[in-house]
Image (tube, rainbow, N blue to C red; front, side):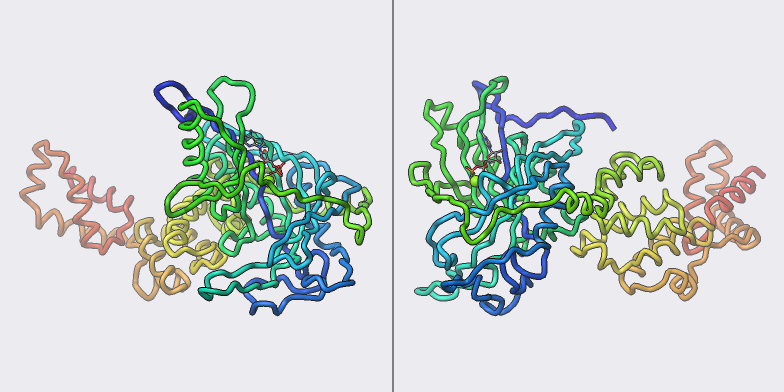
Length: 489
Ligand code: ADP
Ligand code: MG
């Protein structure tokens, strides 16, 4: 495929503006229990049923670190090729809010558990490395519910104390498309590692999006605005586009950008100010006196490293080499760990080329339409593999296979059962096919004459008629051979 050129600039009469973006992603850690307490993290429970005395900040309660959450953060750091810090510190980030009973959030500030790393994006204009600044662990807050009553706010503390990883990128992103690719890649890596389920609808993955603009060619960055808590990739893309345009308009009319925190209004497709730098919180960070500095042994890291699964980039390389896939195809198949598992399951017993076409074509279309994850596919890997084998062996044609596939999607049935019951087996008996061809030529003797006097375009018509007469089941190659033979006479 030909490489495209990067071309995302805000273009005005006066200038081309480059957009600079950095993301702070909040990813909920997959763990049975919370970061500093034993309560469950399960999503969707009745309000306030998963709240320990630590999570509700009763006086005298002490946090106890959950070692599994540390492992999860370290694994994620390793997946991002990042430096793991052997010493990190938990700080108190102080602020008042109804859903934060302690009056502070335990987070990491100057000494995070994971330092600099990177991940690679595959863009239409080539691969692009994006820097990771840091990853730190912190507690989530509870949830204030404002829409259950006109004059009361309710507080649900189930989420209070759940472990989050805040993953901060360098300001290396340059367009909504790159942000889309970045979030997807990060999510993919965490899903491979089983450290975050990446479910944006349930809020397991959300981001603060920092945006600034500068004239194309300028060396230094402009003043940034931070758009808080955006919870879908689509909204991130929209928010960036509208925020960048707002900034360009201000700058071109001679005004300045105030560094501020903004909210994205998804209905109006615009960002609006939440608080300016002057009103910015002073969180008065200080090391939490209830928690010792966190020390990790190199040994602990090495053991986790040994147990890491194959990650998307490595899997992609292997797929390209071993299965002769293009980079584009390999990307499609490794983007989600469940897709790659499905593919590898199918090709255990069937043709790779057919498998890749069926999965990325017909199967993806169905899953998309039905909004299903591949692990819930009505067509199991085993059944798709049988269907492919029925095509490879010539038992059914590619065209009939589409029909069988449709029935498989509806019923979840085994293809061989469908082929048998619906009598869809390919007609490969030369005698039967000869009969069909003879009938077509006889019924259309006028067209046969035209054909023989030079109107060769009619060939397709004969094929079509014969196919129709066979109920679409004629073996195409055999049918063509017989037809050519007969027309020559
Ligand atoms: P803060 O706590 O003030 O939000 P962080 O260091 O946690 O600071 O995050 C800053 C984020 O803003 C990072 O993702 C960084 O890449 C991004 N960023 C920094 N400078 C700019 C800029 N000029 N334009 C866009 N993004 C920026
Ligand atoms: Mg921030």
